[in-house]
Image 1 (cartoon, helix red, strand yellow):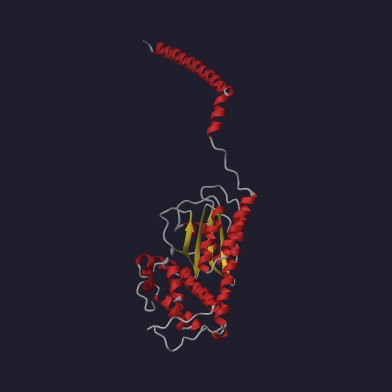
Image 2 (cartoon, rainbow, N blue to C red):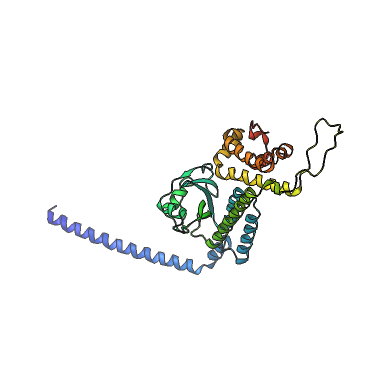
Length: 338
């Protein structure tokens, strides 16, 4: 076959393929439109989908928000120590943020104190965060809050999760104009934080509670011990049969003040040394890891209320066991004043 004949044959075949392609396309378009028309006319599938799919969740009603906020305020105001305030703060913020965490700030470094809503493999308390300039500005009071993700959010999030939320809120907690803690709250898998103002109210309330407890502690330190009523309200007669004399009765006012002082002193240890507390509790050697801190706090308590009161009633020891050891005295270890 000559070259000219081959060229002619190729043209014929090419034209035939194009015509068949166009015909097939028109046929497919017609079938598709017909199918779509049938879908649009069939309401049963729409009804079936609507019956099986849950309606989208709506924002919490106003009365629910107020209820959560009111309950949170009461919980914060009833806290007995600064550490308890911080722990309760996360509990009160939970209804308004999918994830939240608290960092204690000391010497310009933020250390993870506690968190909620993050992955199970998140590290234990005590993970340090070196602040970027944005976070330093928050610590120093040059800015009052951060309401969107950025370098500060990424730094605080690093020890908690690899997943960055679309919305974040960072607020400082101050004591005497000094930042002592910082709160991180984010939206998790949700697109926004719906109630940032509620979070601000709770944080400022926690701040006020911390200042109030610190004021009480300062007041007790500055009040002479002999200004309290005598702790001895009855005399034990000489002729007694017991080999060990019974513990003297303590005036209720003195006991209440002593118990409150012990909670504050122990709460400070829990607040500023969370990693050591957790490690000591797990190892059953809490005194071994916190010897200096516990001895210093007990000495402060004894200086204020007397060795006799502590020896007979063990108010400071009981508070340490309850707050730091979870009620198990074995976890304290070999303390010389047990």
